[in-house]
Image (cartoon, rainbow, N blue to C red; front, side, top):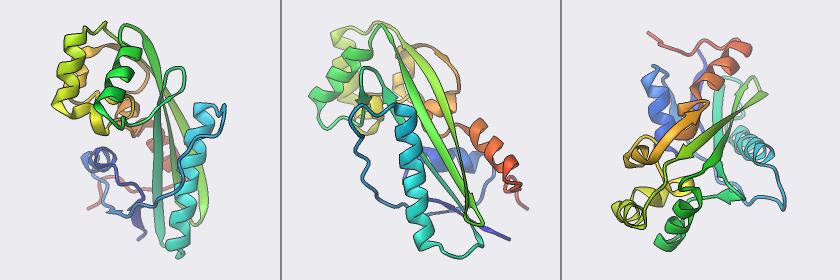
Length: 193
């Protein structure tokens, strides 16, 4: 039986996989995640997800491994990465307040060194946030380790008016896309006994 490796340090991705009964080990790999000039977000997440997978394949050379990687970005007039300061988090939240933005993800899976990558895109519409609400939210600390400075699965959910697309994509792991990949690669890794 193949051993499954989640090549990601994201606790949210691990939680989503555990919630559907997938058994795996975690081993993350660092690569340069700087976007190229004028790089489209879909090209970016595909490049980063596949780049992480190629690094993992250098480590897990044996064909007995199934390797899963992913990358997610928030995009509104440019890439909204994890904020480096409270001021940056405030600026991001002001940018997305009362308007929409997009979350792009790529999931890559390798079986027998064959790599398959698929993409997901979700539109997120925010309520208008007052300066007091933005300051309160930033002071909770939740925005500081989230791309786009918010977490849809936490306190940030109260500011979201609606989404169009996958909720799990906004969390960081579009489970519907993952399911399509494992079906296409003929991998049966769900609910093992």
